[in-house]
Image (tube, rainbow, N blue to C red; front, side):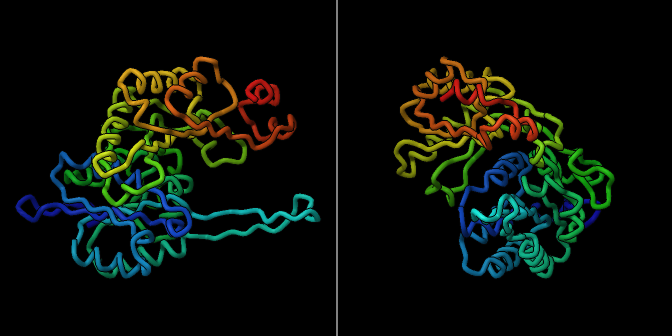
Length: 343
């Protein structure tokens, strides 16, 4: 199904299997928030969409994926690739900055998952996406043997796939061999996300208030976005928080833990974050949530600090160094004085 992923109009209901292709779930489990957003976006199409998190729910992830594909017989298989490797510097005093690096390359395992799924449903169209994929999309498509991918937000593209639009006509879809790579990154938003019951016991529930990144740090793949970013509508953010609180409390959770899944919650300025937190207070949600987010050391006004306190927030300051030379070389959007003022 290379031209259109949809069966004939008189055929069966369109079916899609969204697979959280994240072996790191064995180490640090997280909700498949991106896949939840895709499924929510496709609701209006009438498609049957299932989420599978094989590395979370099964000892044998490959067997679990095979079984799910055999049962559902999907027309489209989406591979959500959140992480492509973990890179951990092994420190010891004698290394002087040149110590060994422990890298676990995860794509070989993901390729085996893709191969197994392809054996079960050889006629299905495979589409890759996710944060890790979006950092090097063409390289991932080539390595995995996948024809199509979505760089950045995939809600609109996935809904169009489920609605039966020809793949070549869908904005936001990238094809293997195209000239575009991360330059095809799509900034887009849907409505409030409907959660999967699988993640009810999660230690936090992601909520995205913006997409992209306002920074251009020298060492980060997000620098390739050239500071492209956009804010989600405040009403949509607050609706999602309110729905998550209602949904989670119905499952026995007391105060609901939220993680604002933004690169930096207070960049490019703090107006958006202040509006989100003020909205939490005005909607009477402050006593029902705790939350955390990544912050740049600046801007951080007294007003923002007070709202963090009122809404039970936990601030994670993303500081790589306090040395001026290192901060300048890394193109960080703060300096030592900002860190001193904040502390």
